[in-house]
Length: 503
Image (cartoon, rainbow, N blue to C red; front, side, top):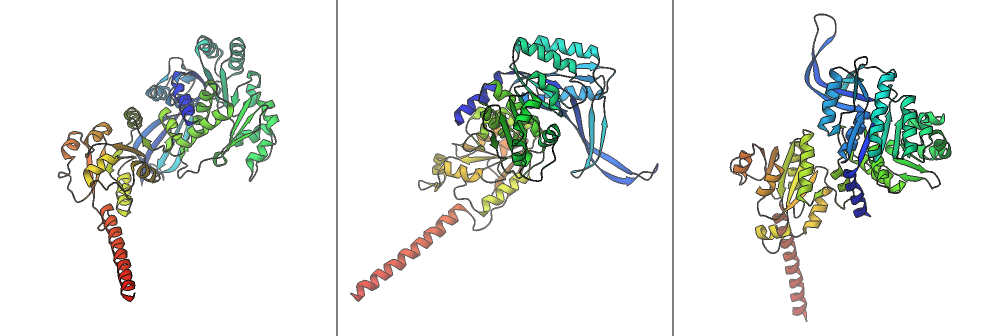
C-alpha cells in the first residue's frame, strides 16, 4: 500500500489545477517597541524585518504547487503595491499568475500583523470586499472557459470577499455540464455551491455547525456531526464531505458509504497556519488521481500533519508527503531526494546544520551533540556512517548495532530532522552535497584543526565545536560491559574451582 501511495503522490506532478478565489496578502512586521513618542503618549515601534506571505485562495494555490501540480490562479486584486507583492510571492512558488486580474477600482485584501517576541500586538486590515464588477466577472469566465478543457481539477476557495459571484458559480456549472472535472469547494458558506454538485467540500467544525444551524458541542464533535451527515450532503450538494476537526482529526463522509474517521497524529508544535489549505490541495489532487475517497482523505490528512510540525504559513512538498508514508520518514536514501529537500529548504530561507557520526550505541554525549547542533539553525541533517564505514574506522567487531537499528533510534529523536547514510570514512563528499550553513563537530578540536576545515572554509560554512563529555562514548560503554563480563567470568571460575576443591 505504501508503494501505491508513493506512486499516487508522485503522479501529482502530472496534474493541471485551477484555483479560483479570494487572494489575501499576509504581511508580518517583526520588531520591538523601544520608547514613547514625543507626538503622543504612544510607543514607537522599530521594525527589524518584514515578510510577505500569501493567504486565502492564494495560499491554496501555493499548496497545490508545492505538491507538484501545474497550478493556475485566478482572482481579482487591485492595482497597488499589495497586489505586486502578492504576485511576486506566487511566482516564487511557481504558481501561474497570468490570469490574475488587476482592477484599479479595488484595493487588494491585505492583513498586516505587527509582532514582537512572538506576540502579535496589532493587525491592520484593508481591502475591497464588495463583489467584483461585471467586466471582471466576464473576463474571469473567459479565462475559466479557455482553461477548463485542459484541467484535471478545480478548487474554489471562497472567503466571502467578492471574487466568487453568482455569475462565476453559474458559469462553472455550465462548463461542468459540458465536461466534468474534479471540483472541490472550500468556503465559509458552502450552501452557495449546491447547484455545482462538487465532488467534495471541506468545512471546518465552525463552518459545519453554522451550515447545520446547531449548537457547538463541548466534546464528541465527530459524533455530533455524524448525526447530520445526510443533511450536510443535501446542503452542500457534494458527494464527499471532509469535516476537519483540528485536534480531533477528520470526519470523511461519502454518500452511500460508512463514515471514515482519521485521528489527528499528536504533534509537538501546533503553530502552522493554513493546514486546511494543505488538506484541500492534497485531497483534490488525490481525487483527480481517481483513488477511493477514504484513500484521498488519508493522503490529505498526512499532508496536513506534515505542515503542523512547521512554523508559520507553510506548505507540504511532494517529497515530504511521500516521505511521510515511508517506514522512517526522516531517512533519506536517494541523492535526488536529498537535493530536492535541500532546494526546498533553502528556498524557504532555512538555516541548515550538518553533523555526522557513527552513533553506534546512543548515549548522553550523542544527545548533547545533537541538541547543540539543532540549536545552531532551523534544520538538522545528520550524516551516519554505514556499517562498512564503521568497520574501516573502528575494526571488525563494530558496529554493535547495524545501520537500520541506528537510523531507527536516531529518527526517534526530536532534534533530528533528516538522516543520510554515507560509505566513506569521512563525510566530505556528503558535506559538498548538503552545503550546510553550519557544521557541528564533536570532540576536542579547534575550528581550524578539524579534518573537514579546508572544505568548510571554501563553502564559507560556520563551524561549531561541541566538546566530548568524559567517560561517555560508545568505546567506553563497550569496555565497561567487557569489564563487567570479565568480572562475572572470574567469579564463576572461582566458584567452579571451590566446588572442585571440595570434591
